Image (cartoon, rainbow, N blue to C red; front, side, top):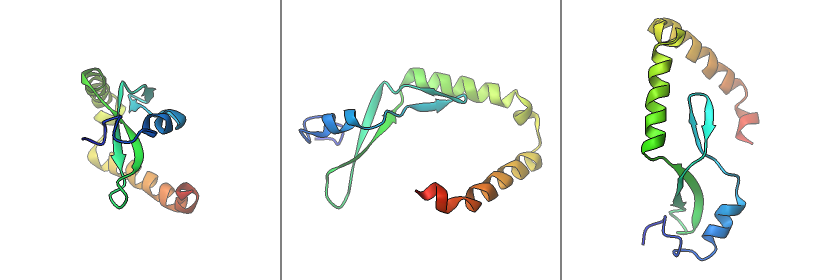
Length: 102
């Protein structure tokens, strides 16, 4: 049986349905997941998390969003400019890492 098999753990589907629903962040917008992938804890074999599984529609949307981003100001900027922006973002994340960890 695969971790995605709903019969693997009788309460897994109920547990999943009680968790917040996550989808795919594509083009700066959240899209509902059409399916999920069950992830098990290696130490216990019990369900650990449910991750959004993408299909053809999500892939097509992500490719279209990537093409649009490439044609935007971001895509027209130089690698150095993008690097500076990403470095500033990384610095901001690191400055808040304790807060973000909780």
